[in-house]
Image (cartoon, rainbow, N blue to C red; front, side, top):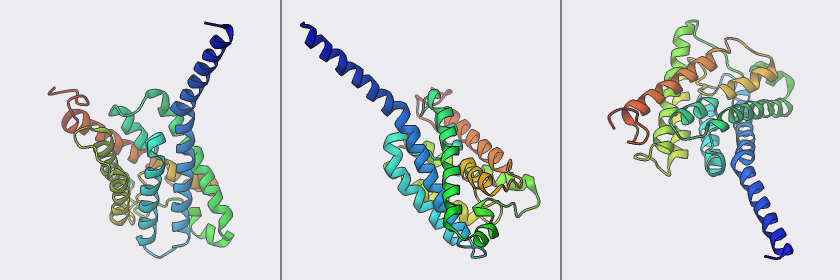
Length: 247
């Protein structure tokens, strides 16, 4: 092999390796950053523009936006856009450990950016009237509110795990199923806890609006719901590769 040919081959391998690294780690994180930012932007805007108007507008906006974003970014990053989903998918065997923390951090960063852009879009008085789309606990029973978040997140993450991770039940319709699940949960639990199901969706507007009322609920509830899904998938409903018992 001549010196020029060897140099060309080494250059090609280096470029291929760099591209592989970008597509494997950098691009997915950028997709989670942008996708979560857009989700929070649409979600917060639907709440700010609907003060006292019920749950129909937020339910439709969150569900439709999430379905579209999963279709767009799913092939790049999986379209998690939610730390609870990322935790569940990893523990069910659908993602690498090396991506878990970067995903969560970029989701939180994207949520802050999306909430910040929402604040820039709306008049000051209108923005403050809804705390910038941040969540408020209507039910004084914090235990019941946390349970509601856990159960709704269980439903959401079960749809993700069964539709995208488990080989027996995997479906091309999962983006729309996930969007419809979010819409249904907001209809069902919007008046109880706000039906967050997503710590990033709660974190972004809480940072920008500096509204932290019972913020912990929107981390503990979704985390518990995601872990319950992992138990069901790993013990009962997963395929032979995923289950850890009854192989």
